[in-house]
Image 1 (tube, rainbow, N blue to C red):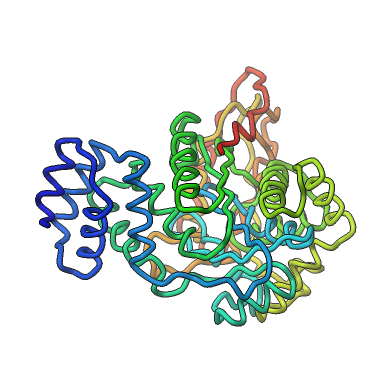
Image 2 (image 1 turned 180 degrees about the vertical axis):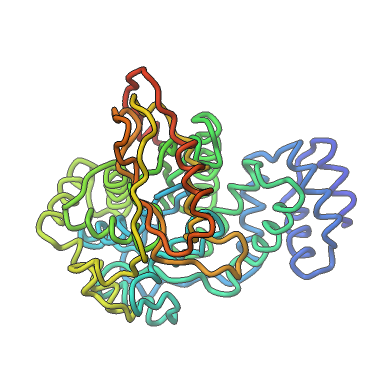
Length: 434
């Protein structure tokens, strides 16, 4: 078998066999197939696409390229949750404790962010003492004790994806549904959970800008999970404005704590409850989402959800008192009020640019070695559809380093469209894909 024959075959739009895909992945990971030939194959895939079976075979070959996590020592059905990402998407920190307090199990491995804010691990590490590096034995102990743990991915989990993604990033082949689906699902399948709930974002702050393309990606990932023997469902949710109000690592932890404590409502809470209820039904804890949601609201109101979050924090070396006193989280040197320059209704937001605002303030990273400032970011005061007067506060900026402050304020204001027409509230959950 020769890689050039696979390139030519895919260039003609033909279907690659499971053996051919495995040959390509194994050869690339071992170094026997060079970058320039893999780049050619990726470009052929980009233009010619892959069918459902090819995408599944690609995903499973990537899973087989490295370690697979064995969660059999955790007794019960483990349900994983994954979001395709967006701005102020702190759902994992809320969903995990909600599911655990309601009787489910969440054994989650997450990554670091490379973009506007840190990933889930960066958010957790803003909690004093929190350790996201746990042995697999300890990981299982934590989940068996309190029902939830979130740790960093193992060093050799899906090495094929790491190599392929780096190459896709520099060859303009990132935005292909099969390649995206394979990348996401390879990590989910290798992480060892029994079932999977996906949150696929769509809108100005998402990778998929329209509902149709987001639904296509959701269907592809659900099909992969199903063909791989793991029951998978997906929600397609909105990212035309930041999901939560907080953008920035410690600020997002603060908002998650407020939601778990029952002190804060909004879109982030609504999506988190929807995801948690799906996970509880998938995990056979409840037979329908209505009963699951009733239990979720109960564990918020009686304090059990917040207690579970504090318990997880303590078992991973962090200070559990943050759930009762968020002033223990990192704080910025100053807080600046960003005010509206005109009156009118907020018609739209460029959410992708609003993510860049957080990056300019120091909340994210553009390179892996960049240091994230946990304390900085901003807290939204207005949402799409709200009326604002000139001089009303649009957001509070939490600032340390001021070198990019003027640029970040200018970009933030440009990202919010204010007009005379009253806009209806945007839809939050578009559909469910099974």
